[in-house]
Image 1 (cartoon, rainbow, N blue to C red):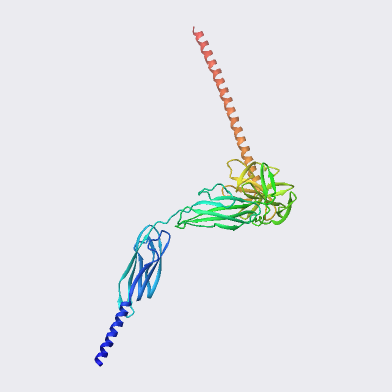
Image 2: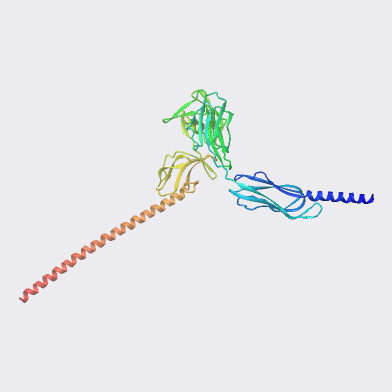
Length: 419
């Protein structure tokens, strides 16, 4: 009986030991065996019944990069991120470096998995874009990124429709949206499989009831009455005025004394205009470092300068310069921080602005005038010297002729005496 007990006990110990030893295993798996460039792959390492250091590496980091040269895993799983860099094949290998099973028996071995990276699609174009009950301007073209669509007055909802050119791409910014009177800006974004994006801009304009139209020259503008999306220039406060007996939003400044309104052209472009006595003048404001100015008209042109025009932003501004080769211009304007009107010197190359130093300019003009006087004097002296030289040359020539005649006459007389 005792011998049987010992036999059974020994057998059980052997079975349990075998089970524990057999329970130790190493495995590897991938979240995606065929990723595209730009995507990530999660590699899962399963070290069941094992404790120690493992390496998880790629055979071709230029194709699939990531992993670790040494990491501790203790009887469980661990995940590692790899990035698909380029098209090709790479083998991910997990290798036991200094590992033992749960009984302390050293463990050695490795597992590997092959990953094939493909080229991700790059197409991020739309094949169509539309707005229900509206016509796009211009007509849709996949290469054109900005459009305008006009809806009737009173419309509160707009439905944007779009189709992607590539089935692997994704589109956002489509569906039904709330709109209000005036401009409503939307973006339709197409994301290619490789992550590259393309944004189509859509301005949905809801017409106004009984719009106020004004004319500036030959162009017709509409007074913008929806001021929810209007941000006035610094220093201007919101108020209201009447145009054509209708109340419209306006903006006033105690500093400039200007009253501004927003006008919109036929293409939907908006801009601030100075409103005074029923007339409209485009409001121009420019910032140079810390200086904000509004250009003003100048009645008298500075001495030594001529009137011209320069381009600031998209506007033509009256300026004054000494000569065509100069990069320096004078601009007369009002400082929007102090309210003072000054003459400013503008350097076109760097786009810098500073208060014009009149005294320095007068000194420069005086020096230039002095140079002119010196040049004129020098020129006059040269001319006088030339005249004197010519006179001397003429006089010398005449003297030589007289002497020659006398010599010739004397010789003739001598010849007659000899005869």
